[in-house]
Length: 156
Image: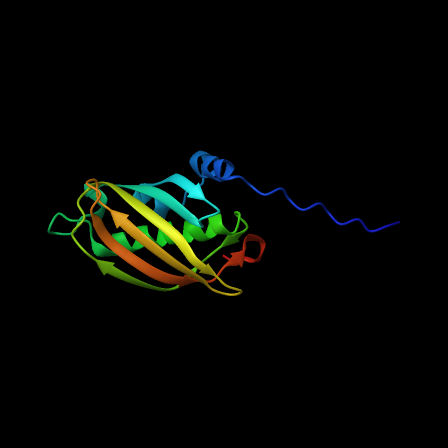
């Protein structure tokens, strides 16, 4: 009997990855709270565009602005999903470190997020993210490092 290697799984297209996100019934509760929705993916550019529907009853501080911790979570979500896309949906990428700069207050409503992988190394991925308000103004930027981990090795 001859050992035959299993065929390599076929790479997913950007359209297939986007469809996978859009039809997911198991969106994490944190993503639901942030109003996360995938808009576009590019494996070639190692980037994603996402939208967040920031609901006033969930995310506001006493000044009626989106609390900064939620903005950080939105940036983290954009950067980590960029890592998943860059890996061809084979890895998760827990954040090891993140730095955020805030440029202006964010108000309830739709925010656009961009996440990208600046460099995918052997053990670390360097990530970048931006958040824009409904008028297209930059709200916040972040950089981070993540630890790409194959899905089958990920321990809960």
